[in-house]
Structures are given as C-alpha cells and as structure tokens.
Length: 82
Figure 1: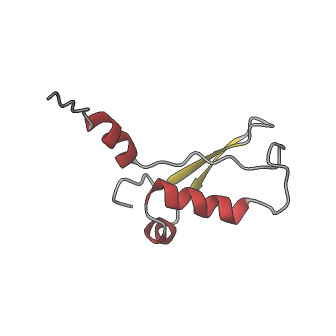
Figure 2 (figure 1 turned 90 degrees about the vertical axis):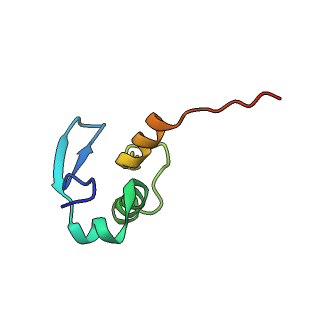
C-alpha cells in the first residue's frame, strides 16, 4: 500500500476498553481518498440508524491523513504592515 497509508485501521471501544486492528482494503483507500473520505465511509458502514447521539452505541470517528499534519507544520502566518 502506497501513498501514505500504513494498511491498518485501529478501533477502540471506549465502553469496554477493547482495542482491535483491521487491515485497510486497498480498494477502499483508493475509492475514498484521505482521512476524511475514509472516516465518512467507516461511519456510514458501521453506524446504526436511530441511536442516541450521546449514547454508547454511537460511533465517534477521528480520521485524518498525513497531509493534515504536514500542512499544520509548514503553514507560517504572514503579517502585513502598511
């Protein structure tokens, strides 16, 4: 797998503390480019309808890509004074 993907997705169940890792399907990574796309797809596939937004059945997804981090590191504020 190339393009910044490590080929794995981590899942943490905050209710039980269970941690599991799943293999990232290369086709899924190509179809939904970036952390945002993958995050939305994971949420769409796994979230059940009609759950309490603040309940334990609700899914909370943190998805980002390496470019989000790099952008924050190399962005320099520029101030103009006239």
